[in-house]
Image (cartoon, rainbow, N blue to C red; front, side, top):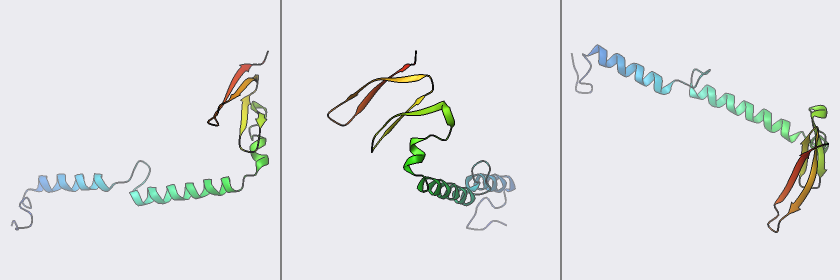
Length: 108
């Protein structure tokens, strides 16, 4: 019995296809049932990252957490330069627009 609202109501195949199309449209990204769950999980990750960042101090920036693989070679009030082990700062140049350019070479 068809109604004025849905002319395909008697076609079970068309209804089934529409149900699956709509279900796929509202299904969340991989690993989540819904988009709402994905959004909540993203918010939780972002808040945790912001807390970690807020708890960092200047000393955390001067001394990297990964040991001797990187070292802080140059530091001022607004920037730092971290070089991989076995390399050295060869030269630096500053420009009028505030840009800094560094040349890094392997340590001999």
